[in-house]
Picture (cartoon, rainbow, N blue to C red):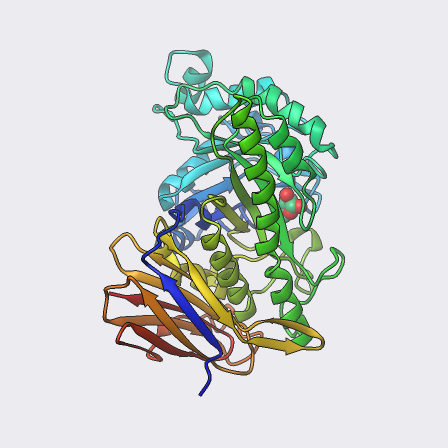
Length: 501
Ligand code: AHR
């Protein structure tokens, strides 16, 4: 019987380390992403730790979330950090998301409390849109200062003695759009000016992130930023959301048809080409800058917003971006993670949008109820890839077609995990047919294969508050390893992670 995909996994040619920050999460002040989803306040009946819900903390800790991006998104460019510190908080309208009041009870201290509770690092996005360089610099001093300055005294008076650790500091968000409708060249100048003044006692300082291109083929911000690198720049962001094609063209999260299935997957697979385009431009520019005696560091491509963007759930506030999450989303997650692993030398950070109750979420909550989504489980199964060494995979996959759209049936990536085992992530994107795979394992010493599988009965199989365990991982017994050759049969619409020891 012919295989649907043949693979060669090259443990003999290890690639870059898969930075654990590729598994980052984005949490914006948007709908119930923060209020209700993470923060319920100390006096809530929902069990909490200093206002942070315990069920969500436990679920995210278990997921080994390495990094959280906050406070936005578009929200970041109207966020004034002083509104969210101290005993008296300032209520403002969240003009981007639903036009509802934000009480700012979740501010800097609460954010750091949250990330420390789940064991994650902090990515803070500063306000360039309506803020000033002074405001951003003072926020950084407030968070990271270690000397006896007035800002550090204020932080201490607000309950935090030792500095917070800022792992990534970004200047602006989507500066081509909601962050100020700028041109790439103008923003590059702004970035250089601001980044010059982001001084900190923290050692090493935060990774400095410039706001990059919009979804799709756009590449003007990456070009402008790379050509005008004057101040330190560790990363440039890229945002790409999976829709049905055009921005206005959004599918339903549930009850979609096969055309919606394949189009969503075909659109998500475009991520590979987008990364390649940016990588090419960045590599060229880096060579040029180094030859001219400029900055020599390799700039990371930080895909700090990605995932599916569907129509809002019927009956929900459209500004809150609430959507259900199905096995299709788990496949989107696995396919993108496979792409990120392949580009681990350039893509050193990503944050899926967004952690809770917003867009392609890990977790949905409703009052005291909480449910883990299929995307949560895909991330869960892929945990061994965090900080593993990427292994090149040559793949010849058969195709899956519907309605004039054709995509590869199988998506794959491999790595050598920190414990020395080999992990292979696989996704069968065909909703009807199983995929038989055969893999040659060059340089792999292990002889025992085990695995986990995530699948569902229907294209829109999902977990609800009433039925929270419809889609969850179980042991996978469909793989065998003999004479250095791995064979497996992946059921239709499944994510499988194999471990070879
Ligand atoms: O994630 C939702 C929004 O999408 C973010 O606020 C913005 O940056 C992007 O347009």
